[in-house]
Image 1: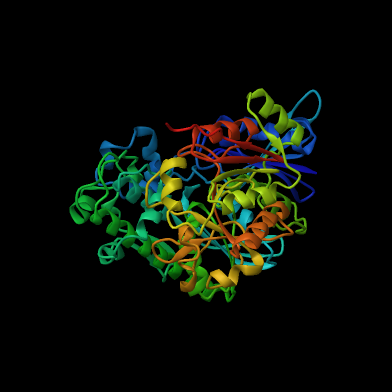
Image 2: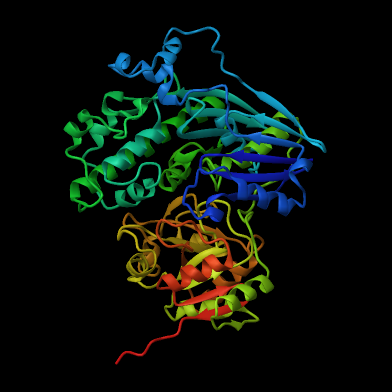
Length: 569
């Protein structure tokens, strides 16, 4: 049985066969528009091609949202209640929602059937947060776990608690829009001069350089009601729930000062606001985890939803909450809902037992050496074949060269995990600034991730609990600050990737070769892309990015490309 899952926000498609994941990919990798919201046509075509079937051969198509919520959350009765001048805002056709029209029942599940001359399509719609929860729990290594989903919104819900047991998920609590951690994070991101729902990473990275002098103000605005198990925000500080292009209110500006525009310099005040807000977000989510642990009596947690991409927060959950084991979906954002929709239908709806663990994230397109060679030849560039690219790449990194590393099938999630990566020497204290300036063309404060061999993780970090998907931030051991300075963030942490030989042997081999040369089992790893571009997907994408940035060498399959050096007179 083939099940195709679709999502249209961070558009993506996934396909499973008899409960096993076959392929998963984001539309942005094909249309080259970062965070593309286009219908995932090309992603679907890739999934079908990888599965070796046509659309009419798919048994079930599952969409990761509930069309029973015909209104955008900002137009819902829940949001309208908080708008002080709603009679000037709400169109007449929405007034019936204020009156609690009994005919407006929210649909819990929908099935459609489309007949063709040959074959048929069975189409289903499942709730958004149930898709998030399924993407985290049903593919995790745990048979029983607490589940936390948290994002901007989906089907009017902004956070949901679940208990996962075997092939079933049970909801045990939720928060409804407009109380939304994801939307509040987007509002603060916009206030600091960045793009909402795109640049939240920048706020998280900037936070490590600041002081938490605004923490008390945020504590009055952002909170968790333990008596109800719901998020609660002082909505007087925000306007996102009335779909105002400016997501924060005048009261927010009165409290924190003038907003920053994108062309303006970042000041100490902006940095301190980022630090204070990030800390408050972490503390509130920790309160939620403490509540969930007490409610379930479990010590295992699965996480998904856009807010679960906050790796600093995830690291603190492991170190400071009652949960001793956590599993974070590598595509915790909405793209992962396409995967979750598949498994929700397979496990929860059809009642099939679980038989798949997501041990890696390499579910996207891959290319043979023949295909790579053709792309290199068509690009009219010189290249050489290498019997062991791992050894040569390790030598180049040890010589302080920055390399592009393009191998096998690409990652589904936003993190580059050693198949579409830019790699460099973490021992060079100036490497972060070099890559930010010459290659990634991005802000000075943005950190880079360390990839570490599984066998040596405890030598460099304060825990050996694995982080295979680069979704957790751990403290770096203080005696290693000067050993791997390029990947130690300003607060002494690193968003690491644990690399295992059984999962990615070629990348593990590269790290091992580097270790043999230098004695260090860590390299700097960042995604193979320029700023504001999706991660490279095809060989031609890799070649274009290689020649458009300051990368020294490209290792693509078994081939190496070296840029010609111009003589300076």
